[in-house]
Image (cartoon, rainbow, N blue to C red; front, side, top):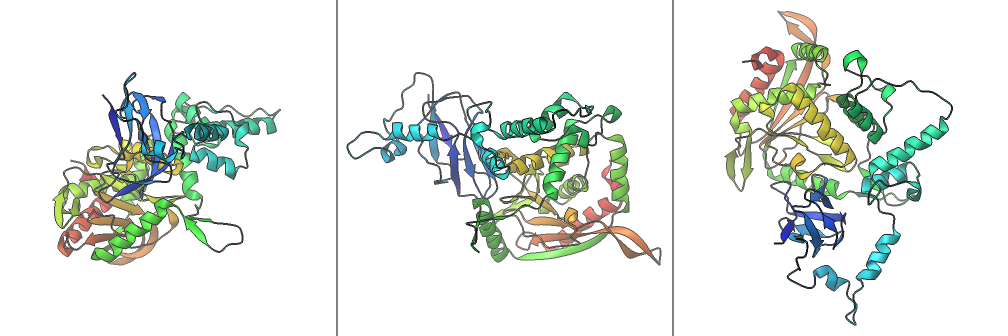
Length: 446
């Protein structure tokens, strides 16, 4: 029996998705879980996976089409099964006036073009590479193939040198090769200073975050006009809608970060994971949401729903705009598990490899701009959530301590709330709980 391929919904407010390209063609054998197509939404560019083993058939949406959520865009046939209908909309689009099909010519045109993923093509353009010189390990050129080609070129350029072999786990070596990292340049946290997989991922994320990414691309040289990605455009529309329809109010709290800093230092001394302040905040906010379920709610069509699970989104800047990967069931995770998920999600986001489960079902969002040296800011609520926490940098300030002025590390938290679902007192109590946990992390135990 045929299985439908349906355009998935990646958020409660998503109506359509744009087909970027099909990774498989009609008549090809596909396996369950294998990527079929790339789609673009306001949240991210993601791949649609095959829901079953079989033959891809009856593709009904072309690259560039905006397709409503829930629409069937193809079917998967069992081997030997015949499609119930003889033609698809794409067949009709490619038929000539005399009734003959233009699909063979279309396929010939496709075959004459070098098949490469969008990320591989972008990397090739950045490094001025000829894709015809890059060897593919599969049906099309992927990011790993471009990186391998670049590394081969580097080896040729450095012929005759004998670089020191870094101590590293097999998985770390594989990841470093895939991501074009030099192991000897990465600080290892394993036994004897060995580089672990988490170290490679952390180095990748740190490098990407430290590199300013353009949010707009010029249309042509000499032109003042700018064009934005579909992700950025839809994000702008959604934030405008939230800003103009949601009655925001803001609660600001400056907290002493001395014990938060000490907590992280103690963890780093005994952990192999690169635990960040964001990881600590995810742990703290998750505990606070359990104590204040009103802030872990969704407002849809005027109805407030208290979410049972705590799924915390992390606002993340990428080249195409802003995405919010989600750490699911954050209240049940250890700090190590939170750190591993955060490292993996941010690496996926920067590489453009986020999948629907990575960005779905968020119930609360944290936006941390501390690493960009921002003192404080007001964040716009990510609907249908009812609140978002904006986090500024940790910096030394003069504060009263035991009746005397003292220099202490502090941070400013700003909670944006939807006044239709959260009142000032509820928001203040929630923010007070977060501040209490930051200033005394031991309260999280027990």
